[in-house]
Amino acid sequence: MNTQTTTAHTEQVEIALDDRSYGIFIGTGLLDQASSYEGIPSAASALVVTNQTVAPLYLRRLVDVLSSRYAAVHTVALPDGEVYKTWESLNLIFDALLGHGCDRKTVMFALGGGVVGDMTGFAAASYMRGVPFVQVPTTLLAQVDSSVGGKTAINHPLGKNMIGAFYQPQRVVCDLDTLQTLPVRELSAGLAEVIKYGPIADMAFLAWIEDHIGALMARDTAALAHAVKRSCEIKAWVVGQDEREAGLRAVLNFGHTFGHAIEAGMGYGHWLHGEAVGCGMVMAARLSEALGLVDRSFVDRLKALIERAGLPTVAPVLDAQDNVGRYLALMRVDKKAEAGEIKFVLIDAPGRATVRSAPDALVAEVIRASCAAT
Ligand code: NAD
Ligand code: GLY
Image (cartoon, rainbow, N blue to C red; front, side, top):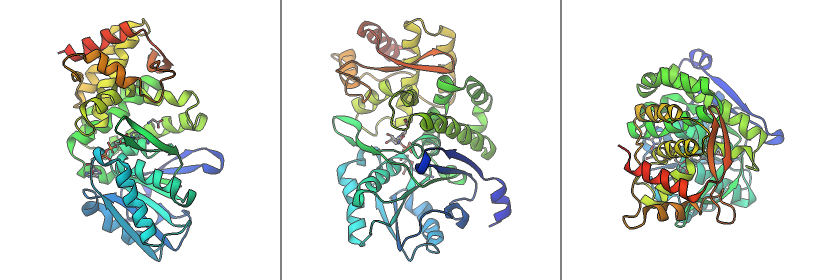
């Protein structure tokens, strides 16, 4: 490998959180480059958590590079899919940690997408009351969002990501090369979270995505590098001010209130998280319009970009008898809901988000329009 070339393409974004600060490394060839892991705590052992899809692609390379840092590098490959983001899978990680005699210095590595990252982070937060962990995200969604900021969780049948912890990784290593093997549907799902950063924080970035959506869909490395870096910068700016979502951080959930209802209502795994978020952003933009916060041209612009990213914008019918009721019931389980009142992330001016409730009648109108839209 040409280290010089690789190093020249490495960018770094800092998450500034006092003694929990860390770097996000973004570049090509980083997965099996020793310098990607320099400075991470040393220990006798490491545990790499991955899944059965990612393992054959990248596990050997990560284990090989880590073997020069840790005397024992153990691995566990979980079943693949959102439907396995459960207690049962979490226990497989604990089984591996305990079975291999891992101690409280053992460093955990999450190699995979957001499902592996969220579960590994939660396991790291709770094993022996906390061991260090590193995120090595291999999906676009994980590189631009889930690996950054310390939210970790598993799903409960009654609600998504309902059981979890805030727990920051020691580092995030985003190797852009891994995105070349991502299925196209997953690439699109990741683009939903990239697009999200535009309306909530940076309309110039939204315009850049509009200009580069072809290059992003074609997996052009330079375009991906910019998209990952700018997304991480915006997320770092938000998380640096509000790590535990006392307020501001909720804006990162633009599209997620409707999106989580779609995911849970369809059954986890039918719609990808990013697909549900993409459609959910159109619904949230429509609700913003219905409340008089943005005009129709903003909604149309966002919808057009989401469609160009290969994402669905027509919401699914979740219940043939009482579709609106089903959406509302699911959204009341959202973590932002207070005393049963649903809170939405809305756009109150292009590039700026706000969190507020909305009258059920208006929400119902948006659900009807979004499910019927063509
Ligand atoms: P995922 O982890 O299910 O990965 C998507 C698919 O791609 C899987 O089948 C996986 O095996 C496969 N895959 C991963 N890397 C690959 C590669 N390089 N080549 C080929 N296949 C690859 O899904 P995701 O979209 O990465 O993450 C979604 C999850 O992230 C959801 O559970 C969501 O709740 C969570 N999330 C968390 C946060 C957070 O802040 N913690 C933010 C956003 C989303
Ligand atoms: N993905 C939302 C958050 O990290 O807060």
